[in-house]
Image 1 (cartoon, rainbow, N blue to C red):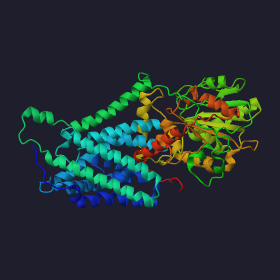
Image 2: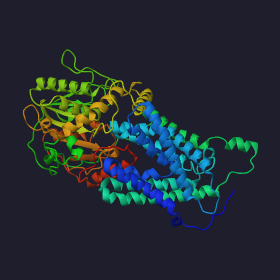
Image 3: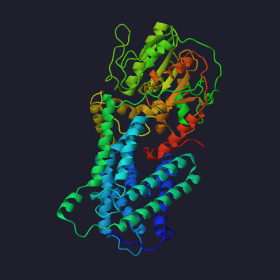
Image 4: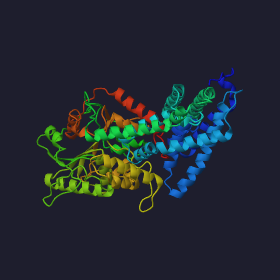
Length: 581
């Protein structure tokens, strides 16, 4: 039945405001001291229950510990989270109306949190995977799963028997409004110093309080029917809310399967013109993204657009395809763009007895990172022996990880220039124990990797070896290339020239830092740039020593920086340092 609410105002609920704002500010202040890069998630601690559950689950996944430790954390956090939700609900409840008992509310909130954690585990696992190997596809899968589930459970914990019904439209509206506010707050927080970020965190906490007030008012208006027929009790006894959340997961898995089989084909993004100026400066692409102001290579960032360089014809180019690539036709497009230049494709299987790359299929690239770097170094030296001159490298996606490993493990190789397409930036932001020790997050990632592998053409093993080795070595290799001046030189002592081409979709995984002028941003999805007919001419121009035209892509660069800021609230909280300054 419907119950009239007494006349009252939101601002009269001072206890609600104090707890919602104070809780968010407390976490924000703590993170400002110990993990500044994670401050964007702080306001979510007092959000509506399903969003708050995702906040907690991601923190649980950052702790790479054993199952007993994880189980203890889950039990303790379940009690704390349920108690906090009950407190917020009771403080938001309309005065003068009977509220649910504390016991019933605690059980309801605990059930919601446990269910949300279970259903959101795939999204949290994908987000954890993005923190290990940052590229956009897993994030683009995790985000709709997370959003769909939190909306399906938007009334959870507040309504009596919430699992038996779909959320009211107004409950979804409160959840969605709070979600948008948290996203905007996260984007602002990521760019502000801690002292200026705290007022934004407090304001987001105030929005959380308002959402709780609105949800509690809806719950107070709705009461279960006193008398229901037997068919109605059977029908309305079904767990509609959990089923709708499960349908979200099934839908995303189904779409992924259809994409793997080619039933759904995304349009190939074509850049209408060559974006911003390529840098011919002696700067490692990793350093471009690291935000390190004291790097020995930092002075080389940002050569002006159109700056002329001495034209040079590369003697040989080694093309390193990304995940799922097969050898050896990926270099055909670049071969046509560089007539007279020896273009060879890197083989993940290695070289044959004749010194030529071995043919390989889409299932050959799951290699540990050290092996990948060693194999790339060997094929660079083999091609150098044939050409007699420094070798230029064009690497895409997983191939960029091979470049980092190669440069770290084999400094002084005969390399003249390196082009990174869809580069993996800051791998290993989170990691898990190496060797026989396993953690919950690692096991969840292994299971998800097997699931993705089983519905893809790559086999059930997926990328297990690559994931494990990037977790162990990825951050070290990337950091060494980013800050090690010696690694930026070839065998002849000359600095290696670098060019990075970042697809706009990958902005969701980029560090929240201003992009230097030497980074190209193109409207594209991750992967596929190696065959893009508008990107290839830019690569050819750079390798030939000619300036890359600048059509004025300031808007694209601004879009990329905005997207990275917006996404930060829903990525894994990491403890790495934020951008300097």
